[in-house]
Amino acid sequence: MRIVPSIRSVRSLMFLLVILAMSAISFAQIGISVRIGPPAIPVYEQPLCPGEGYMWTPGYWAYGPDGYFWVPGTWVMAPEVGFLWTPGWWGWGGGGFFFHTGWWGPHIGFYGGINYGFGYFGHGYEGGRWDNGHFFYNRSVNNVNITNIHNTYNTTINNTNVNRVSYNGGEGGINERARPEEESAANERHIAPIAAQTQHEEAARNDPQQRASVNNGKPPVAATPRPGALHESGAVPAKEAGAPANRGETEQQGKEQAARPENNVPRPPTAESHAENNVPRPPATHAKDLAPHPLPEPPNTGNPKLDQKYQQKQAKLIANQNAEHQKLQQKQEQEHQRLAQQKANEARTQQIEQKHQQQTQKMEQKHAQQQQKMQHKVQSASRPRR
Image (cartoon, rainbow, N blue to C red; front, side):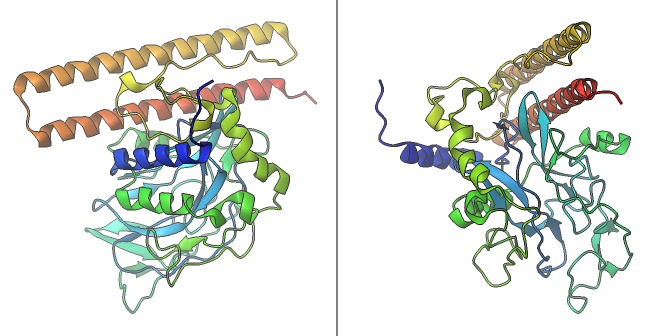
């Protein structure tokens, strides 16, 4: 049996290596499958907007080696004029909950129907809009000082969504699907979470008080005026948990999820793929880095013929998705060959690498949504008829 110094030290080393490799790449968790859904969205107030051009990015539950932890909502400068933030979200699919990474783009995409508040009420964004290169804030849902920020308007939003559930699908989850305009937004050019956002998440990860197993769904820092400012003036605590927490369940998450082989996500095989090292990896940059999608567990609707039908559909879906892996891999390798032949400079090479990363992440997000849709059909067929 191989001896390691300690599980804790190995985890710490792995996270350090990840951060060094990530740069501006999102610390996305689309590759992590968790058996238990995240806690409810806590109740908190929005900090004052620090200045013009800052966009609100709502808080969310992320997942680490110690279970779920709260990443505070914060104000972030938009990476480009005209770009808006589509929040990440947890969704059920393939026997576990997967995290769909947020992104910047010209339009708001699907974020699971989750009510994050402050303009993000499940679909679209009511917190503001771009106009002639300037962002205008809706004062009815944003905490803005009109003395310092003059680009404001006041439109009352009749929000009837009071649900604080933080995940889509699965038992007790939000039952919402992407609208046509949200699907169109997913096909536009995106920018992954910027470095300030990934560093903000890492700061939350390193604070034990942000863990659900410690705060029972009521994080001491629910929002900050700027990324990473968890312990600076202006940080806001949660007023209350979004729902009563099951302490025993949250305490077990970090121990149980990382140790379960069935919860290990499809990812490239590495020498570090031991149970104690099952920590979030950065999203794959190329299709060649992706492991084939595994077949999900056979459906059990109580109808053998229907089970066989869905099993065939699942097998066909997985085969098509793995074929898309291979097709994109060939395309990306051809582009690498052309770069080598043209002796492309560093700027051009970096541009192609960024395009490859976006292609790969977009494909995996689409695959996760397809699997979730299939899982929803199976679950619907399994429900008893009245």
